[in-house]
Length: 262
Image (tube, rainbow, N blue to C red; front, side, top):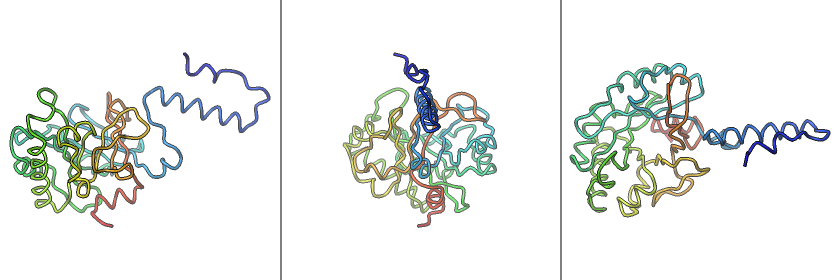
């Protein structure tokens, strides 16, 4: 069924209000069809648009990104204890110079080395924090690897210990609680629905194509901090698809998180 069919019917003696309503309905349907999430006016005031990127996005014009309305970005820095994203240094500095509030993220490899070793490598290669009004705390990307066992062959107890090890080391190095990026399914499966990090780490939830994300054990519907809502977004200054995200709050609250202030 053509979802736009009813929108093309002529209105009988349309009022201005009816015309405006029809335009809003059409635009909402169009944006939904293209995979974008449409925020209500209230949501638009309390959700700050952002992105997350790696070298797969290629060369980025960060001035164009910022001018498009994107206010923050997480940028891949490291993976395991041997890999650093080849575009990280360029992106991290260029985002800062364009006025984008940016943070670094680490792709976890819990089967290759300890959480402490990977947190140390991350903090030493871009994941450290500074109170400069434009730097977010580092994020730990916890998800299934491109190939192999989804939980890296670790038991739920071993995974909890690995995450705790990473958290303790990162906080000792930077003074900040790390952000946790994950999905509800991965977290609940691989940590055994552990609630032990919900009071410590801001949550960056990945859940695409829904009006509200499903959250892992421990976090409530009002306590997610970042939400990656699509992996097929587009942004001026970036070629191809890019992950699009929301921050759950105003810009003032985003700056408070960046600066570690109340």
